[in-house]
Length: 512
Image (tube, rainbow, N blue to C red; front, side, top):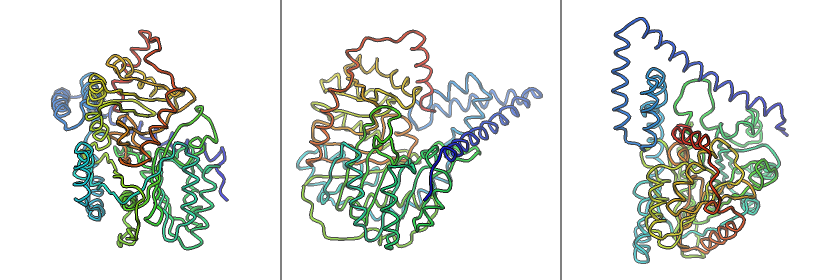
């Protein structure tokens, strides 16, 4: 059995530090080279000024969120040489041209297997055109069909979710797919590991995909060799390397488990001890997840295969992972699982949230570990509150990243001023990523209310309505508010120095 001791953890973190130093050295080398050239040639100096002007205009005209443009414009204007060099290294969309082409090819192959049953859309339109439009958007812009023959169960306790997940995995006959941002070879993973090893011995195909940055400090390189020696396939997404690469900023933040193409799980939790309150680095950890069964599992399979094959193409016979089997849903709800990618120009995660805000009538509640908003999202949140909707956001009481928490708190005054209610989860860290609107429709998944989730990471979430699970999500929210601190009732303790530091951090938050 492989053990993750303190030495292996230090080695893992050391690898991240070495990679960071390597990238920093390369950036400094490019900047110094350009500065020296400027000293020897007035023509080069004039050329730098011309490039600065062209870049500022180019950034201003970019088809992206305005919050991303402002930091680049300021950096290029205030420090032209540094700004120009860093922009050409990290700011150009063309820098990921090959990666985009690879994903486009994979998506064209895989998403062709997903089809929308128009009768389901028509049925939902007759019941509620507003809700139908939310699902129409996902099919049109994210290739995510809405299904009806699907059941969903909500878990407000991750231990309950994992217990159910293990039970389903023990019934696997053909394959188990696991895709997680973070995996820790510790107590929380041991029961799952034993099930995977037993199933591998039975001939079940096991695949594990994890993000390298998410597992820094949790896993070392021996993990892959160990799991593969047990007959379990492993792939690591976007390995951390000491070379300049803009794609390093895009991480796999998805959390998906697929079992035989029949049952799937998703939610906010990773496979590490704090997510199940085995350890308490930030107080009591609050997270959630869902189990779904039926036709919608097909989308979960496709989303997993998208990431697996984008790393290294393998699957030719896709249909064997998309079994057709008789299933009769117990409930008559509507369910869509969707992915969000930083490589297209469609911010599906943010748009789903904003669509719900636009048609909210009574209330809309959010939970998020980080609150770093675009101007568009801020306007929708405050606009809903202004028209009388009860808009509430729950953030952590004990942060995991103090700098990001200061950015989060910098958004409080503007939101509170316009009627949005902010609550801090006093027992500890709030990691749920979910939303409920008017007790009718729910989002549960991996998408935070921050720039990284909404624009830079690969994410996934489920949108559903008409299920008993909707009321369970509402009950979970109702149980949270009494143990949270209502920030609208707290006196402001922001000193001038604190306000200034928060504003500076907030200015560059889209680049964090």
